Image (cartoon, rainbow over all chains, first blue to last red; front, side, top):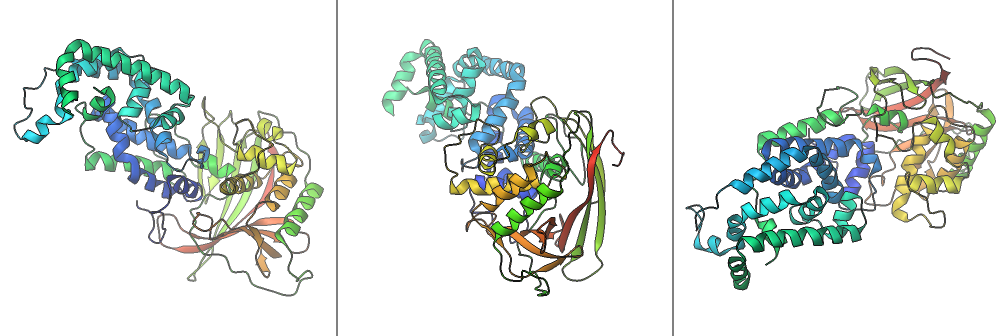
Length: 205
Length: 316
């Protein structure tokens, strides 16, 4: 179903769309169209494709059911949606742990990456991320869930500190301290793996 | 080295969202949105039929723009323009005068019988629905809700679920009877209210929606309806429609809320109707599009009976 023609919600803020959906439930589909991809991508990075589809769908049905509780002073609904998604992901802790473990065991890709990558691609940081994905996965797996949530809301959901705090319903100071600890642990894990290579990478940037 | 950047660059072998998966997810959302008309089992989080909201909400049907045009009969006294404040304060006084105090027990049900009439704007027969609903007083029991003739059981609240404004009588009883305080409590939606803070312009639509939701309940603790009318009278943008209209055998005055330009309420499409003589609340009317069609109807809805009963299907 699409929003009815003539209903101009394209320019509206998320908050305005949600407010409107209080009276016109189907307007909520606009929010899905805006954010389904990013919520799915976040969930897919954390849980893989199959569970991500479920989490993404549930995020929007849950959000829809809770739309009357949305604080409309927040124009951007992403923190709210990612907060719901993070809660739902929390039900898959074991699956997430298994996935991270599996990713941690994957052999590092051959130097240069896939054959169709250009030289420019190879010098990009993406290559170094691929190169240390085992370490990244291992470090994420070892983080306490609440630290991992904060780190990945910032890194994978692109939320700011304030937004992550809103998403998790915790003070922004808590976000800062959890993020600080999580980053330190990831850094330690990476430093232990190949500090020289990484230092060189960053020197090149 | 920046580990955040490194993480951002790492796709963690995440597969992209396929069109098929997107369509499936959107379908699930659609099912949730259509819940009153077509309940479909959705796995996962306890899905709550929209009717829960409809019971608490103003009107269930989707609405589109267009303001109801009232007809000036010009035959009643008080044909001079009255303000929305006058009408709503009159309605508040009338509510206080006519309502009987009730004290439903938690194990009882609120009974509501409501008529909804849909008159096609392009002409055609009027469709009339008589909906009878039984709503659990404390939300702990299954409620039975009819809406536009579609009947269904609504499961009790699950842990962590609640509606706002509250459905539970015990919570309704705690709402302040002072209109200004009621506004603030509704504005803060369940969090600790800051009574010293003035309501911001962008919060008024919120307040108005919640007040309307309260007023849509057929039975309220004594004094709360009156307080809600008075609080509504103080909402900027609430205005009286010129002229009179016929509504359910009464000469009626229409009151509507018009939000700021650019907001979803800018068109003031929903009209509350009050008896032109007594200011007693009669019901509401709006021009609405029949869900999932392009048919435009003028919808009138009004409560014809209500009360407290011991069990579902019992009438007062």
